[in-house]
Amino acid sequence: MYQRFRRGLRDELARNWEKINTFLVSAEDLDGTEIMDRVDANQFLASARTESEMIIRDGRRERVTEMISYIRSDGDTTEALVEFVNPRDRGTKYLMLDDELWMYFPDADDLVRISGHMLREGMMGSDFSYQDALESEKLTQLYDFLLEDTEMVAEREAYVIKATAKDGQDVAYYQRRFWVDAERFVILREEMYARDGRLLKDMVTHRVEEVEEDRWLPVELTMTDRLREDSETVYRITDIQLHYDIRDGLISLDSLR
Amino acid sequence: MHSKLTVYPLLLALALFLASVPVTAANWGGEIGLQTSVLYSGGFRTELQVHGVLEPFLPDQPPFSTRIAVEGAIAPSQAELDIRYLYLRWQEGSQQITVGRQPVGWGYGSMLNPLGYGLDVTGLGGQSVTPVVDGLRYTGSFGGGHRLDLVMDYAGSRGERSLHDLGYGARFRAPVAGWDFSANVSSQPLSLPLGPEPDALALQERLLRAGVSLKGDAGPVGVYGSLGLVRLHEANEQDILLQVGMDASTTLGSSYQRRPLTVQMEYLRFLGDTLNPGLLLAFGDDSGTQDMTTAPPSEDASGPMTGLFLINTTLQWDYFTHLGTALIWPVGTGTVVLAPYLVSDLGGNLELQVQGDMMRMTDGTYDFGVRLGLKRFF
Image (tube, rainbow over all chains, first blue to last red; front, side, top):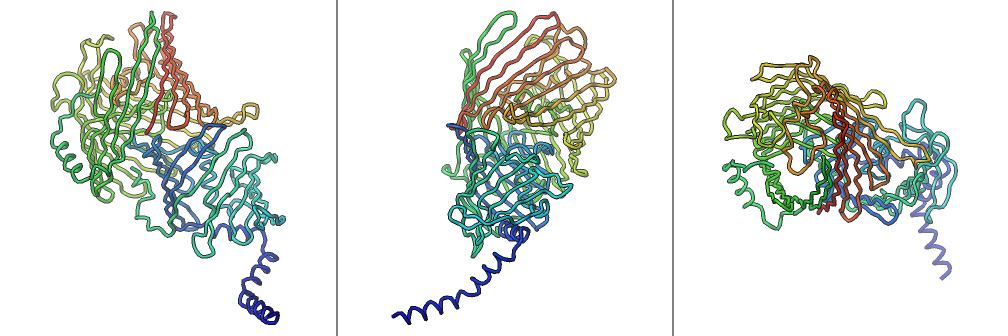
């Protein structure tokens, strides 16, 4: 019986050797930029439709915002249309075109361009700023990355990546620190710092989902503003459809009505 | 509020549309609220009002869509029921035609839009007013954010309606090098009251406006402005209108828990001093139950209004609460209005609004009011 076990184990190792060997090679050879490139590749949404909710909690009060989003990217520029469907904000839409933000108000049947300085404000009063959403699509363009260490996060082995803003880049956070799942290449945790080293925000991923074979996305995460007490914003994707057939012109100023 | 909508063919078209949509497909929503006010103008008086909006959100039946909203208000001495929106929209590709009672917002980011169709007020003292018209609107999109709006409506507020009460306007809008550019033209009937009494005689005029507006960013600050020609046709008077404004935001220091503060200010005047910015207020509030906080021209004004200066500041106190103050200064009249406000989301789709306004009169006396409102969205 012992001989059969040894042969079985050897066969199993042979079948999975390429995967194991690749992982071991990855862990030794990847630098911070390569790891974040894989994260970007994982999170890259050529076209997608999501249904999601944002729950803002401050002490005992809570507000839920529900939205439907259409996202499209060609790798260089990302566009998104977000429509709110909860009673208070029903019909309000946001259109993000690269670094421009437009809002549509149903009671005016008109759209307004949002001033650039408002991009740093929280989306619908939350801890997620418009700039957070815009910058998350182009981290490798804005930051230099350094692999610092590996740690365990929620029983998952994670790379610890330190990111520093590149010279001349106007970014919301001068430094960031990412904990990236070493197998799935999703961000499990993130800290955002000001230039003087103050911790401004942190984000924790609570749940990830395998949306395609070997492709994982975070579907529930919490953002906390560390300069405020007893408050947080939970973002939860309730439905996601990748490779969604977004009709021509949907994510454009021309269709924002 | 509006008088009865009399576009019978529209009602017939809407009836046919609604007949094609199962009742169960409607997703009902709206709001209901209670407002109490304490006002002082030489003496105290109080007001109490219950108001609500009911709207069935119907699924589109391409190429048609519709919007129906009914609003009502009940006060101790009166009750009102009216249609806020009732329109049918046809859309094919980038062309769109809307018929019926509909909002026509031509705002471009200013608090007061002097070149809007009617009077656009956005975010002044926490309030917004969009003109609502009974008419026909064409919107064409030509790619790259280029858009043309053509509007025609039955306007006029007194007497029987006639073709002379027809208003019309056009707006071309385009993004230009990251800036939002608009060119507007409109011709609308205007009723200018000759006294403050509700039944005072009114001068029937036609207001012609043509101009351009621009909004964009100058570094960390938003800047905007508009320039146009305004003409009173019957009086044969005209003037050049200029509006400039800016908006900026900052985060208060750590001792204020880094609360975001936004400031917006703008100045409007007629360069030839022939016309008066108070002219625009004659459009009044046609949007229903929203109250305007701008001050009307006063008989007791120490002089004509030579300009209108507006400042609005908003502080995000926490995730749920905004505090703000609006300052409205009709330059040259000796009056000023200060309007603080608070809006707080109490959770469970319940919202608290507290609004105040204090008006300094030319004789040094003050009128003021405080309004407390509770609103539930569903």
